[in-house]
Length: 228
Image (cartoon, helix red, strand yellow):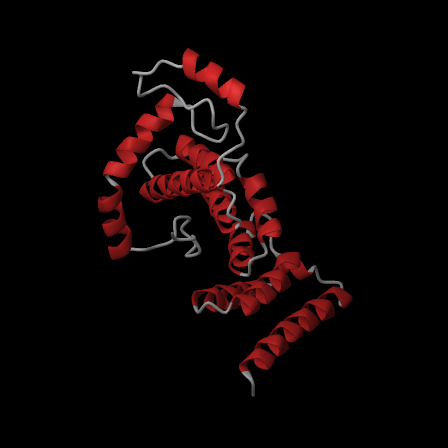
């Protein structure tokens, strides 16, 4: 039997069992069948069969017992399927919860923004993640990468300048202060604290890359973190 059909039949059998339980007056949420669906979903995710994974997750969700939250796992599966809008909606909600969950959520929102090539948005998300978890090297590296790509975009697409305003600003701008923020470029980072942190991050980027290369893993503990 085709493996895809086999998984579909398993999901249908599971749903039929729940329907039978409900028809018999039993609360489907009292059954333990949901565990098998979650296990199948996680196994499918592990083997990168994300379509099957989302099928099993969605089958299990309606009968999950109170206190069982699979939203982050589902969001990561949606992310892998490039369902960015759906995944982002979950991460936005999770970003308002406890610090570890918020850090993961902001990190993943940054990853989504990177996929969409919205580097300014990614920078903001990674900064928020570091506020919750300042020592996370993966987020530090992703932030430095987002800033690098943003600077490349700025070079390729410089904002239009008015010659008269430019001459005026050139006269007003201190010539010898290398730390002076670039006021001509609205997308340039003008937060001196972030600039100093970026310099530190760039110095340790090579070391971070080696660590990531030697031990790539998921940031959120569910084996579903996006790696850059």
